Amino acid sequence: TNHLVWLRNDLRWRDNPALYYASVAAQAEQSNLAVIVTPTPAQWSEHNESDAKTGLRAGLVNRLATALAALGIPLHSLEAKTFDQLPEIISQFCLDNDIHNVWFNQDLPIHEQQRDKAVCERLQQHQINTHLQAEDLIVAQPVLSQQGTPFKVFTPFFKRWLTLLAQQDITPFADPEPQAEPLPFTPTSFTWEMPFREDLWPADQDTAKQKLWQFCHHKERHYQAGRDYPIEPATSTLSPYLALGALGPRQCLEAIFYTCDQEGKRWQDSVWLKELAWRDFYRQLMKHFPLLCMSHPFKAETNALIWRRNEAEFQAWCEGKTGFPIVDAAMRQLNQTGWMHNRLRMVAASFFTKLMFADWRRGEAYFMSKLIDGEFAANNGGWQWSASTGCDAAPYFRVFNPTRQSETYDKEGDFIRRFVPELAPLDAKSIHDPKPEQRKRCGYPAPIIDYKPARLAAIAAFDALKGK
Ligand code: FAD
Image (cartoon, rainbow, N blue to C red; front, top):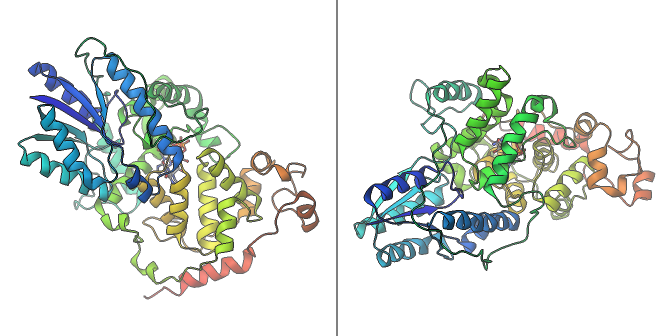
């Protein structure tokens, strides 16, 4: 009766509940433990997963396989095209290898839940036990109001979240025990492997852990002051690792609690921890409101909005050629690195949904197709926040002015200079909105949108929804 762990978006051997419990059970029964991953490249394309994320995933799988091999635990890659082939592939693997127990951590998006349900049903038909562990959330239990309903506003959610967190065990799950002599292993290259910026995000969970501790030791205390300035390396840039589960929630808690303790401050006051609460908030929303996974806005009345569809504007936005330097710098950062600073995600998404008045779902899909940290719940949450269609979203009449955002958060224009090099010669005053002759001289386009009327038109469109 061997045990199998099925890893998906939890590509780590540390702090992994399914791997930990399976390893304990296998040791107790003196049976064998194996691990599988199930790449589904066609399904990923359907979900708009980026090449960058796929590349990082391949690297993490190889690293994981190396680490597990050292513990005598084999990792097998069972490739399928789409999710619907997995019940057959996984059950056949179990039958071939005398496996009677399959362990995995829950995944929240609806397709993933349907996939897991189908696999569990098939395994149960073969009398194979399935053991589901909690999903990758900081607070694993449901965060509900006193009435037992999900929160639709972040602040009360956060209050309750902090209370539950104070009662929760936060010790990371132990690493699996070695089960045999080390196995020979050489990293393979997968057919679905893609290039990505490995210089920025090494595919190694130990590097991610180091980055986490370094961030907590040196940067966390300056996070609140620096986090909105894209030129500052003030945020953790851990999102790609969190999205693929190369870092576990309890590892983050361990580091942040330790740091707060060392600095004599309450962990409840950590602004960084609050950002991790946003991650939980959006993940829980997706779980409670599955319609979010089906391209529906949270606020149903916003279905009546008639978005504009202008292909030339869309292309200009994608390529970072809108003529708004901060928006273009943001989009080029995304295209070149697979990552975008949070302040800029808000600026770029607000530009798209309010000034271009383009359908947020198109912007959401483009982000997903480029982001190395693309994660359905956070991306959908961020887009619906920006479009004012979401729950606890930005009020619709607060339309970001890209030039003001630029002057405030990239005061000297250094971030623009880095990603829009043709504007590098301009001084800090003119770089945010160059004059027509400066644009001409630098070979930089005129603005594709006239800010003031576009802002008023967006507000009017939302105003018209009132009473609907
Ligand atoms: P830090 O500031 O160091 O924060 C730590 C971690 O907290 C992040 O790594 C992330 O896991 C989580 N986090 C922080 N802010 C948020 C937030 N607003 N919502 C949810 N989780 C958060 N984040 C993603 O991980 N994947 C996405 O696909 C994604 N798409 C977004 C789209 C839009 C339009 C917007 C406005 C935001 C999006 N975010 C997304 C949230 C946020 O921008 C990124 O998590 C953050 O920029 C990642 O950088 P960091 O790791 O340095 O974050």
